[in-house]
Length: 150
Image 1 (cartoon, rainbow, N blue to C red):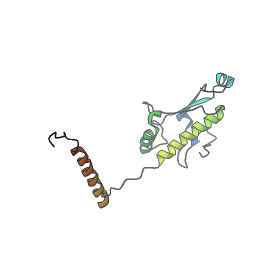
Image 2 (cartoon, rainbow, N blue to C red):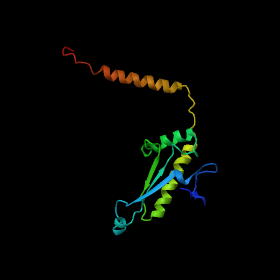
Image 3 (cartoon, rainbow, N blue to C red):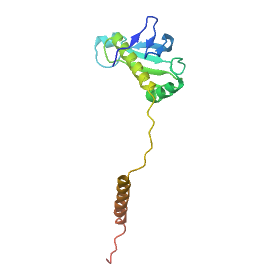
Image 4 (cartoon, one colour):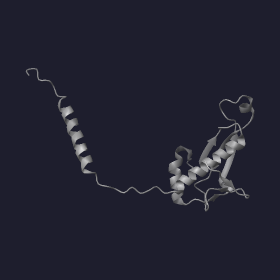
């Protein structure tokens, strides 16, 4: 994970030409689950970052579609991307981790997938396919009823 940069005016810089405004991001803090003793019971260290991706002017429609596909069930019906982190005991570190994850997701969505170039099946693959079909057919042919006279 690379270091992400926050500008002085509160923007989260993803790449040279993409920076997320502070109104697009909202963070909420809650108590983390799991071990941690008194710290886990008293301090709200877990971070939930909500990025309003659908209404973001920073991302193009193509990037938004790829981001939606990559995000999976972290994408809400309202078009927001929700990421959570409760890995460390430090709220600040969890906050950095979740922002890095958001930046990583957006960077992955920025690169368009390579187009697959359709190729014809090779002669060898055709022969292997037909041989497998023939073997399978022979196996099924042997499953018939046994002739008692025979």
